[in-house]
Length: 190
Image (cartoon, helix red, strand yellow):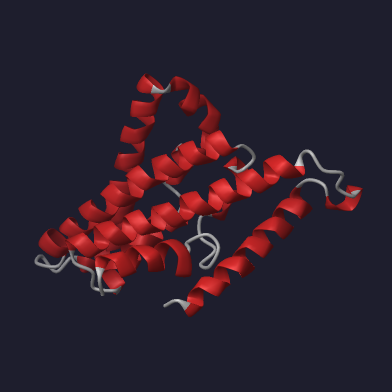
């Protein structure tokens, strides 16, 4: 599979949020403002891309040769947690406003099942290092597209007269559902 195909497939066809329904907590929680959504998307991109590379290297060169592949989930979680801590420290020091706007959702990247899911899927698909990096990057791009799109819709919804029963979470879930259905159209491309 070509690297471009991996990016397009992971970003659009198998979008981690809208097709696989992973990472929904931060998707719904942070998507009220475009700026915060883009910031979280960039943080997830950094963590996903680097964690995919590190997880691939550890799996191929440490866990498999030592017969410890059964520890992959624990090792991947530790790698992800360390990377999230580094991103969090970087943002706290260099972009404090972004750090504040993300709040609790930044450390929750550690427990975001989408990040762990990519590392495990890369192993399951037998991806080499480059394929893993591109799959992680493509997944993060897809996550960022989805969260920024939902934030854009939510910002416009704030200006509309929504019937009382649909205000708040119901209209957000309805919009997310419609986005997921729209992304299903990309499955014809694969």
